[in-house]
Every structure is written in structure tokens, then in C-alpha cells.
Length: 92
Image 1 (tube, rainbow, N blue to C red):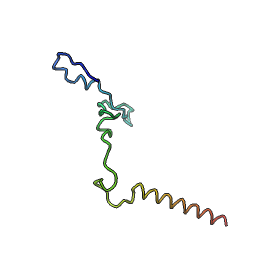
Image 2: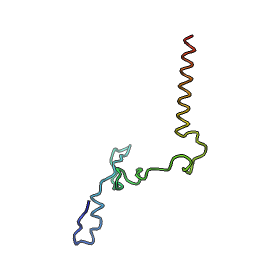
Image 3: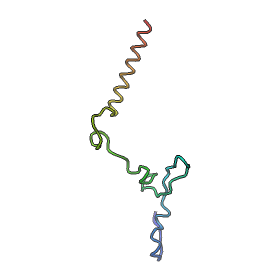
């Protein structure tokens, strides 16, 4: 969107005033954030528009992989297998 500021050099913030606003809401008040949203996103830089940290070993706090998506899924499948075995044994 192109904003015409005209000949007024003082009105340099005309584009910032008409920018779309962040859609994040405060839990306590329910009010919307008044900051301009990052271009191409619905939220401002303070509410997560930059996307967060990388996944896996590229993350700076990655240690062992106990809580990776693959490990969680494997444990979920193992619990389902145990549950099915327990149900089968109680039916004997």
C-alpha cells in the first residue's frame, strides 16, 4: 500500500499510522496490542512474528533429544502397545 505524504516533510509517520495492527490480546484486560504488525504476519515483533528458535540440534539449548517429536511419538506408541497387551491379558 502506497501512502501519499504530500509536501509535508514532518508527516513521515503516515505509513506507520495506517499499518495493520497486531491481533494479540492481553489475558488480563482483553485489549488488543496497538503495535504495528510485521509485514506479512498478523502479530508484532513482540508477540512472535519472527518465528522462534530452530528445532533440534540447531537450537542453542538442545541437550539430549528426550523430548523431540520422534521420541515423544515412540513413547506414545509404546504406551498404546502396553495398554493393548494389558487389556488382552485381563480378558484371559
